Length: 339
Image (cartoon, rainbow, N blue to C red; front, side, top):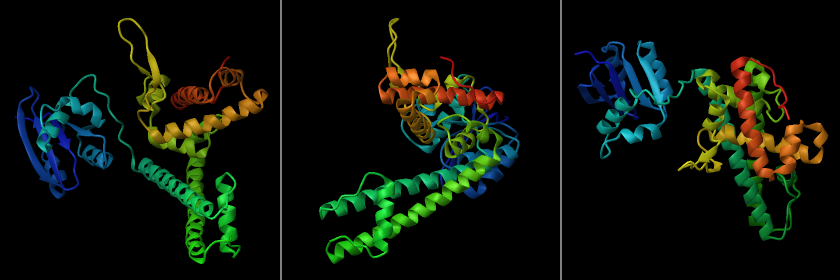
């Protein structure tokens, strides 16, 4: 009996495979060691392989495609309803095998190695930024305990750190000043690393035609453009711009029933990193619209003037996501929104 569909439950060392025939009959459900996984799939005829989109799934997707299999990744949340009862690797593999055959299932595009490499820079930079924020808060709190207050902004902390390492110490106990020196040294080191990561991302953005096109949109810089291109890949996987906005969690949560439409806050589903970058970028544009309305388009000026500030920035991010889809799928340049 020929295997037509395989559900693969990924793991670090021991994988679970569940294979069925064309009519749904179970052919195997067994555990396989990592070292023997590719050899096992080499013995199978080309078939449909389903996996949850998780750590290492893109790697295994690329490897299995090289063997001639059709590989599809699915969000783990969409697979869960197909788990019958209990929790085990065998049950999960069976659920994956069942879910991948559903005609309405939504799939995740397999990323290339280059995409993942660029995203690794973004993740590393984002981690460094969060660590720098933690250090800045620690420096501020330590100074505050001894009556010293720093001005608002990360630049103020950087300036203080440089002065401290140059020997300009505040009036504090020697032990506290010693700890402060270590923190300032770490802070400036993180600053340098963040600048290096940012430069790498900017270089990648300048080498990508799609990223350069996106950078012409107000509120989108090289970091946002690079992240969008590396994460999305082929934007045609989304049918419309609204689908992309929904994937980024920028559309309202629908709780309609009984013919009454009830739209709530945004869903905040999908890629948090790109959503954050878009909202931050549109926030800077909204600030400009408040200060100088004549420098922005009429739609932006009106929504900032009429709506609460945060609601306006999220609405602008939603509209930006739709424009991004149009620019990537149709290879069009940015056009200001009509009033």
